[in-house]
Length: 95
Image (tube, rainbow, N blue to C red; front, side, top):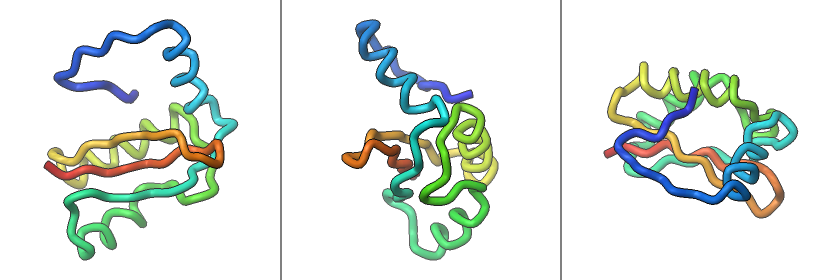
């Protein structure tokens, strides 16, 4: 399950419901991007994620992606953003 680590977050219930909508399986993955990750590492990591642009996004699929990222490199983190097209953008971050 996705977790926020070392962050305290205060949000309204409206924001919570909007965030839950990102993971209900009705939205599609719009893009996968990386930050501070070399091209060679990116090329090794992305095929292992088990999700591709256009796939439905659910809590379960994102949980699998997060586990894969952590197994690949325990320092990498996952960030999710709403896309302009109504989908979800997955960003993998290195320290």
